[in-house]
Amino acid sequence: MKETKSIKFNAQQHQQHENGHFSPFKFAKLLDPEASWDKDQLGDVLHWIRQVVALFCGLLWGAIPVVGGIWIFLFLAISTGIIYGYYAMILKIDEEEFGGHAALLQEGLFASITLFLLAWILVYSLAHF
Image (tube, rainbow, N blue to C red; front, side):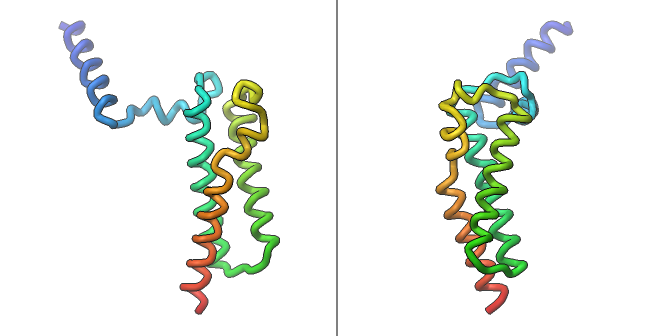
């Protein structure tokens, strides 16, 4: 009886995965240094982490309000530091398998600069003019 329940449960989980719903173990992989990554998966994760950092910093910089080029460089330093810390210290991956530090650090960089500047300028303009 238990065997048929487990088979049905596994079939339901597989069907949910095919329908696009994420299982809880997918999110656990983000912090698991033992997880295996392919180049596209890791690139996507690094890209979206960088986008979240860009949106957060852009909203914060616009709300504070700060002006000047130094803040762009500060954003780049924060964003690059978070990405490096994530793949080198949390995931503990061998960066040479994924094209080296340069390839990993530039993943999503230009899109994040655009998002950062857009959020910063919009929030600054809407809140302070």
